[in-house]
Length: 140
Image 1 (spheres, rainbow, N blue to C red):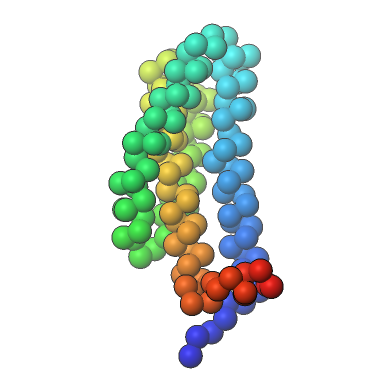
Image 2 (cartoon, rainbow, N blue to C red):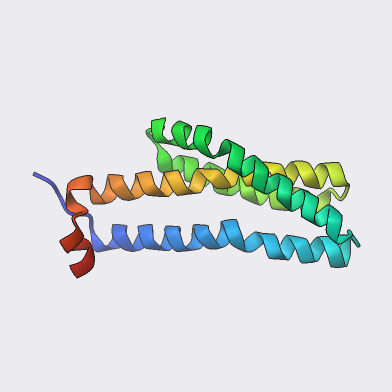
């Protein structure tokens, strides 16, 4: 017999999904402004650092997705990824050379690829595949 997830569990899943999207994509504009205004970086160097992060994330997407799919503890992977994103952001604040910021950006780009498969796995684990029919999704 399948047990339906509680309202609290579903609300928690919604909250994590909403906040993780904000954490992952919301940091970039602030980092760009910080690099330009506080550290006086030129737009070219900022663009190179952000492009390197995007390319690293693109290259890592498939292997990281396969790795996360094989994990049993996706919630913990999400927590570790969030911590690594925070460490990357702090590294940019404390280390100002191009190489250090580039390394932090690449790390954050790769770590960002953990979130979609981990969230999908957690959602399927909580809601169960059989309960994800179109009529239940559209009717609540």
